[in-house]
Image (tube, rainbow, N blue to C red; front, side):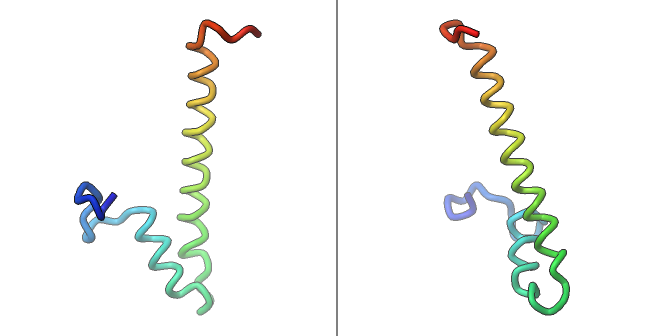
Length: 65
């Protein structure tokens, strides 16, 4: 979203910035610098997706269970 001007400023940490910084030093022995933020991002997206599916199933009156 930074390309639209609504992203996080470069001075503030974010998961994307942490993954980028870790990618630059990935093969120098500090693999966890990008793996843990990447895993956090994957789990966050999965949790939001599962919550959205649950919310759709709960609020949709046409779905028969």
